[in-house]
Amino acid sequence: MKELLPFLKALCEENRINIIRLLLDREHCVCELMEKLNLSQSTISHHIKILKQAGLLNERSRGTWNYYSLNKNGFKQYASLLEEKLFQPVAKSIFKECPAAKTRCKSD
Image (cartoon, rainbow, N blue to C red; front, side, top):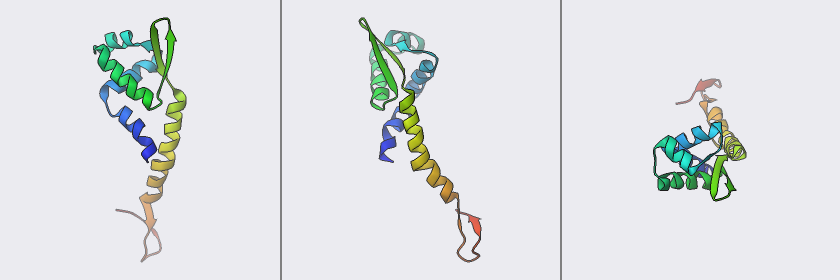
């Protein structure tokens, strides 16, 4: 589960979710994100740093500008981890064997 922490941290803040939503459409530079989200350059940079550390963003330089886009492979890797570490164990634990009746019953 420790592998999921960067992903969960990246998604637990509304501004980062808004950045991801904007990047779903196309890549953006920081100045575009600042304008669309009405946030300072330092705030946008802080959120981009966290998203990059989680492996969720790509960065491309063009001249003096950096452009950011979603790293689809990063999202796919976390989706696999969520399936393996969280969703499958939860699905298996929803029903358990009733020791007395030897039938399946809903667990508490």
